[in-house]
Length: 458
Image (cartoon, rainbow, N blue to C red; front, top):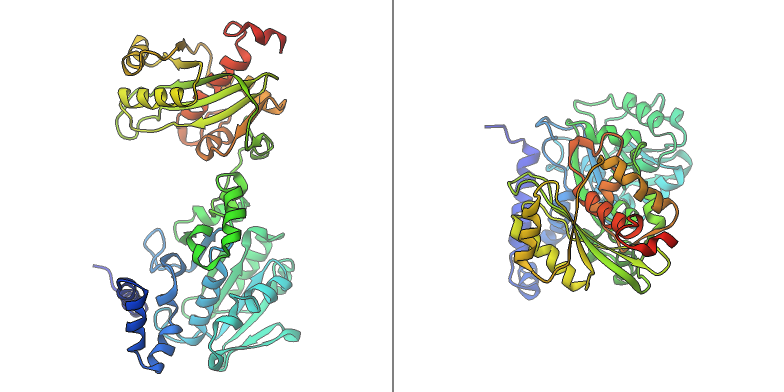
């Protein structure tokens, strides 16, 4: 049995108290319980961050490899509470909060993209260090010295990541690095910071950032000795303006920008991929003109066992100008034949499609037989792969480049496969089931002149 450290024990107690408060029947009961506390107790509890924070805003006890962490990476969307998380960690360390440290930490580094970001967000912002402290504990900010000093003597120095050399020389016990994904000289500034973390028994640092696919962030994510927390904008919805949630979250949800800036996902790019994120974003729309023809393409799995390939089910329509419009991605994993056939048939009926285009390499006549059994009224067109996946996909990717394909909405899982499909297929050797279905649908509508003689004029 592993040892429970004193800080972890204190954090467990505070989390237990928070759970009891959350278990109250309603706000009236919770308010009644709150009134039973003395003013001194209320003041104490109001300043206990573990009672207010979400679990992702509290430091894990251990890193991914089971070791005691020295770097805590907090990835989150815009407005997810990252700044408050970093500020409360620094506050707790400086004041010696028992849920964080055995003794107060005396020397900090605060690093932002620019000095103005450190001042306006990390220190003087609405969730910054000055705002979160009670009056009697609040540190004093001296802008001319770029120095924040607590009444107990703890000191934090402000640095700009734009000036990595300024970190050469000073030494610290702890650091808070904000928006690492935006740092212009990320590697140089990070390296100098690591050299400066050499005071105390256990130097530690917290990184709070919206993810961007920079090499440094990739390396940190791949390091099992780093503790990782994730949060989305929606997780902090109770503290955000409803108009922001409706306008911004509603507009960007599911798009590449939304997944990065709202969901806090690291969106990767492959240099040899047939599609890029920018190409797909250029093809994105919210509606489509009248469609002359609609097909639902099915790429059946070879097995329904757990961990087997997914069944690709993608619907695409063709308008009068010869532009394809991706309408739906209903792909799913772990479905038995009658289940995926029923899923495809329901999409066919809902969109009033003209045909079900089904690859029969895996199941042969069985595929058509299952679909006919589920819904005999579906018009099934069987197709057979005679070329490799890459060769089949290349002409479709060229249609995107020529502006001949549009995405009606966002299809994150499908788009991830598209942007991960390189010379050797998908990373990790996975099967591109959604992409295969997309390719079959667009090939049938826009590239197979035998399927539709009207394509000869396009």
